[in-house]
Image (cartoon, rainbow, N blue to C red; front, top):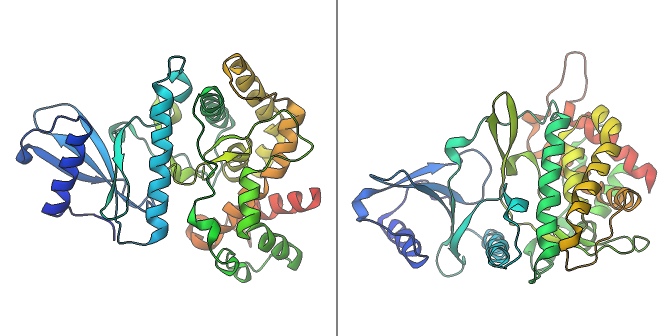
Length: 361
C-alpha cells in the first residue's frame, strides 16, 4: 500500500525520524503532512512536511515494509545512494556544483521491520509541467541534462569512497521468465526482434548492459549511472521562457557501470528519431568535453574520447529499446498515433531504434 493518509502511528514515526536527524520538530499539532507527487508512478508515498509559522518545508519519502521484498530493496538501494552522496559532500575537495540537480539529503532509515523513510529537500513549489517526451524533448534541453550527467559522474570519479556496483538489487535474481516483457502484444515486432529483446532482458544480460565496459574500450573506470533516467524520474522548472532540469529523482536502480547508459536512455527515449540521428554526434562531443573539464580532479582512471563514447553508446543503446518496450506495453496511452499512422509515436521510435541496434550487433 502507499501511505496516502498518515495514521497517528506513522505520523509519530516520521516525527521521530526527523528529530533523530537533527531536524527541529515543533509541537506535533503545528506540523502538517501533505501528499505530493501523485500519479507519478512512485513505489513510495511522498509527503511535504510543513511547519506552521515557518517558511521551510521538507519532503519525506515513505516506503511500506509490508508491500513486498522488491519495494523494500529499492528503497534501501536509494538510501545507499544518498548515504554515499552525503559522504562525498563531506569530503574536503567535493564540488557541489557537479550535483546541483540532485536533491539534498537530510537522513533516512532502512525499510525492513518498519517503514523506510528518506528525508529530502522539497522542490514541489518550483516544479512546472513536464516537457512532452512523446513529441520529443528539445535538443537544447538534452544538452543541459547531459551536463548534469557529466557532473554526477565526475563527482563519483573524484570521491574517496566507492559505492557498490548494484548487484544486490533483487530484480537481477528473479527467474528469467519473469524478466521478459509481453512481447507477443507488439504486433509489428518481427521474430528476430523478439529473440534479441528476450536475450537482452535476461537478468544476467540486463545487468551486463548496465554495468559492463566493452573489452576493447580501455582506460575507462565504471562510474555512477542512474539506470532509470526516463522522463518520470526528472522534474523541471521554468526559467523565463526556458524549461530546464530542476532535479533527477528516484535513485533506486543506480549502479556503477557504463558511463553512457544514462545518455543512451535520454536520447533513445526522449528524442525523436530524426533528432537522435542528427544530433547524437554533437551530444557525445559535448559530453566528452564536459567530463574532460573535470578530469584533473579524478581519483579513478577515466580517459574518455569521442571514439570511446561512441563504442560505449553502441553497447548502451540496447537499454532504451527495453525502456521504450515497457512504455509501449505498460503505458499504451503514451503511444499516441498521429492522423494516418497505424503505429503510435513511441512504437515508431522503438522500431527504428531497435532495428538500428540489431543491425549494429
